Length: 260
Image 1: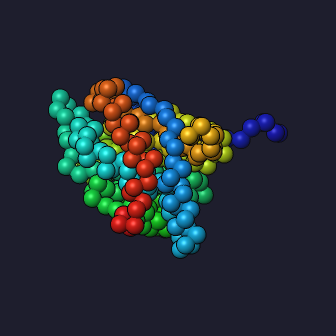
Image 2 (image 1 turned 135 degrees about the vertical axis):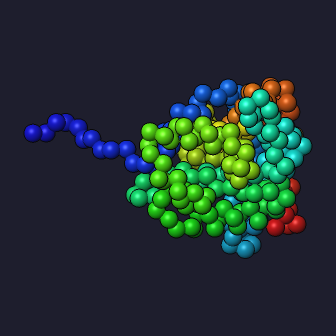
Image 3 (image 1 turned 45 degrees about the horizontal axis):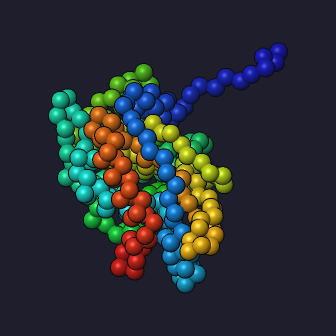
């Protein structure tokens, strides 16, 4: 008899994502939404491709700009443990990399360590290598193979403990970037869940007519959501950070030849 539906068990990968979202949605988060004119960096990327045949990564560029700006905001590179603020020495940026594990697509964090000291090209190479890494289990990318042995009912507890663990924070950082919206052809922003103190969610790229010197010109704009842990970051410093981050992105200066 046809019941009119199918029932399949949740995979461990999906349970882990669900547990993480359940814990992180309880955070006191504020979100900033913006559109960034990235015409200049996109022009540099296009010219580089025409000359060399190498495609440059927009995600790697965003990570590079983010890490450089964060050097001037040390309090943002921190987290609260008990009643103390733990400030991390290095800017480690976790980038969500989509991988196909056991037949399903799952986002997995890959840590770019000491990102504030690395060039764009170094960061791009690390991300390329991460996407090439084989594996069919959640945790392979971050050397956490043992993660899969945690019983499903303990996943939320593990996420809560890991969120306040100093060794885990040093290893994976408290800054994150996810580029899930870049697959859309329409203007698109996302409101994410995440344990990071600063989380940059990359949306889509769209063209907008902008008046320049009395003329209308078509410029490329990137939709961005930047989320902050409000327990650590207040609105005014968040706005100042956003301004500096946007100007750095727009300039394209970190794509200069010496950045390679």
